[in-house]
Image (cartoon, rainbow, N blue to C red; front, side):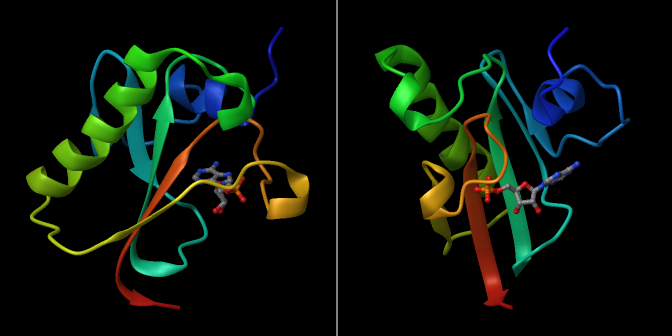
Length: 105
Ligand code: AMP
């Protein structure tokens, strides 16, 4: 049994609301926001980090998901961030892209 917290969220175990979803990824609000808008783009496929993902289609789809969700929410200016590895600050070992917009806390 996979005890990855993001896999559980994707599976609907916690009833987390998805602000956007498609075939490749789900997007939900970060539980501990570091900005007025702080979203996480999470691939449905479990991969620990960017280092473990070589699939060009999924890599491309994740970036397209960033563009789609920001466009849908009318967010024109934003930062994206991927923490890769514990020493870089990665806490959840299921690849995700942070989207930070508005005032940064
Ligand atoms: P990272 O440090 O890049 O691994 O980021 C992990 C992020 O996941 C942190 O910003 C956490 O606040 C966020 N997080 C952890 N658990 C949850 C959860 N259950 N729902 C939403 N966000 C979460």
